[in-house]
Image (cartoon, rainbow, N blue to C red; front, top):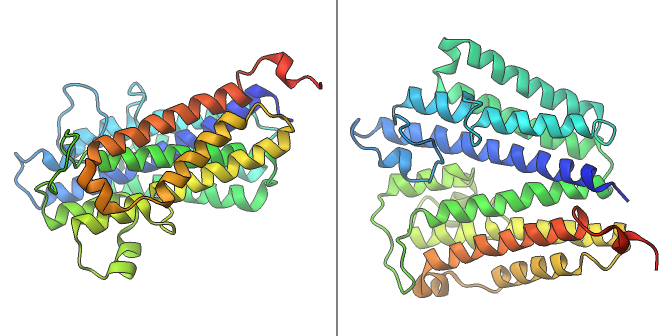
Amino acid sequence: MLLSRVADALYWMTRYLERAEHTARLVDVAVDLRLGRSSSDASAMQLFGLVLPAGTSLTPKSLTEVAFFDSANPNSITACVIAARENARQVRDEISTEMWEQLNALFLRLRQMRDDPARASRTNDAARALLEGAHLFAGVTDATMGHGEGWHYLQAGRFLERAVATARLLATVFTDESGPVAMPPLDRADWVALLRSCAALEGYCRQYTADVRPERVTEFLLLNAECPRSVRFAAGRVEDALQALARHSGRATGARAERLAGRLRASLDYAQVDEVLSEGPHTYLHGLGAQCGQLNAALYQSYITYAVESALPA
């Protein structure tokens, strides 16, 4: 059984990397969306709920500097990669050499881009570097790290962060109402951008063709069982990871976390998009976020901040 500090570092290492990848895609898509609109139109930058410091200019250059390279901004990509690298350093003996080298290479590449003004100003290049680095790390992890207890903490962190991010992203496009709601007044480019922000445009087109309809986009990102960035897919992977952790720990303390994960997965397995839209998507999506928060707390209580007595043999 892993020490709680090791479990904590592994869990947050992939949460931070997933957060960095998500932010990179948001910024990249928001800048592309803004290019086709007037310079005074800030909706392209604000549409997807980017978390930025107060007073941040919404020009592509300023946005890239703050969202990518400002280490003082805790939500920036650089800050997330630094945090992931520090967690990896703390558990160097638990991860493979290839994982450490890839994460370190990503950190160095971002630093080099930050120090080169010409490269740092190119949002697409910066986003591509981060996305490639994050994808390589995920592939290297699956190929070189044993799929034991530590690997399942990585999966729990990655997919819980993904579920939260996708639910929050969808919540930004609906008004704050608890009752039935009409589809928000977004144009086709906005809905396409929403799919691109989740790397889901091609998957959506394979299932629905290029006919982009708001209710279908909502269903695909929320309830599709095969889209790797849908909330339903991520919730299923979180439950799988927690079930595996319960088997590895051999203790009953993880029952609450496992139960919450199962409840979340079941609610998404049997949900219908028309019911979600008619009953109030904003409230529903924020409810999903709250469930993910409860799940995070339960996981911590079960496997990281548990009382010592609960780990002792009966």
